[in-house]
Image (cartoon, rainbow, N blue to C red; front, side, top):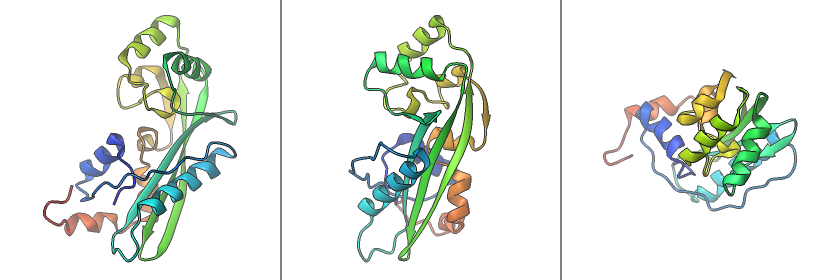
Length: 190
């Protein structure tokens, strides 16, 4: 069970052939405090909200935060906010932190993935072009590295999939049974 309706998270699991269903967690996200701790707490809150008492399913919760020098850059509310976020990240190396939690068999497994992303210096022309794509909408940090946002990035140090939205290597570290789920796919599973 994935405690998210994120198309990016779903696509990562689908590429693996992992059967899953989606149960988006409707929880208010914590936004103040240490970014790594917030990502972990938000992921746990999502997983717990999506879990069902007595269910034999594994529940995956994830929360991704973009930060630079301790400042968290969430999902911009409008184009002006997206421009300000991208200008702040321009020419700098920011951190993408994802808390990932798996609730399975009464056990909570968790970890935080960290990836450093370096942006190229963004001039007005590149910013105008990217903002016109509207890809920034609903994206932590105001960009999508797997899409047109790749043009903003000079380099990545760490898990690329973390920047997309689901740190797969970290997920497999805490839930090594996941590949076995592919072998037992029930018919009709996503």
